[in-house]
Amino acid sequence: QKEVEQNSGPLSVPEGAIASLNCTYSDRGSQSFFWYRQYSGKSPELIMSIYSNGDKEDGRFTAQLNKASQYVSLLIRDSQPSDSATYLCALLRGDTDKLIFGTGTRLQVFP
Amino acid sequence: DAGVTQSPTHLIKTRGQQVTLRCSPISGHKSVSWYQQVLGQGPQFIFQYYEKEERGRGNFPDRFSARQFPNYSSELNVNALLLGDSALYLCASSLVIGSNEKLFFGSGTQLSVL
Image 1 (tube, rainbow over the protein chains, first blue to last red):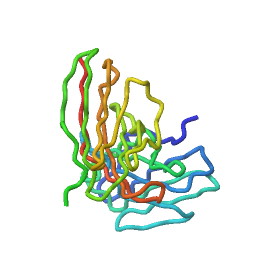
Image 2 (cartoon, rainbow over the protein chains, first blue to last red; image 1 turned 90 degrees about the vertical axis):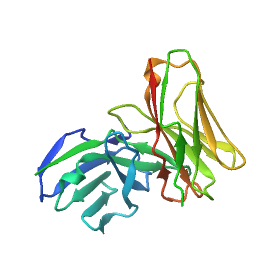
Image 3 (cartoon, rainbow over the protein chains, first blue to last red; image 1 turned 180 degrees about the vertical axis):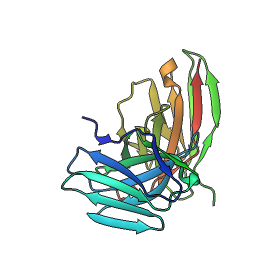
């Protein structure tokens, strides 16, 4: 079982819709979770971090964490074509900066 | 303020050669981590250095080595290159480690092994 699992997609949504990206993880001891956006050929860019159960909102983005069910999700409201990218879910391992990444979900927002 | 800088941006090597990739962290950041990202996959952790000491190593062969200098910059060395080493190599820095602090990624070095 992979430590962080994501559906590779592509996930296609129309402009203006809500995009829902999901991620599950295997280590119950994980405490810190991150969503990165990566455009083709570019480096990952942090868009959300979440550490507590529940929802965390930042603009059009909402991260959701459920530690009991071991899943993390990212909602993107009012999706724009510029949101088209690969979204990487990651968790922080222990007392290091070792991020464990999923394979990413490719999101396509069409006009 | 300068972000994390990596050099070179692109590199082409042949099998069996050696390569050195360089990273300068954000000013004041003492932790540098290296990741390998193969096309279509998420980044995989290679090394972490903090205050010039290795603090973590991923599941990579001994052909991969790294070091951190007194100014906190870092080099990643890969010997005896294989075709499978072709990837985007990412460097990330942070002020301290294990504090849930945001990691800042550089723009990466795209290595192609022919």
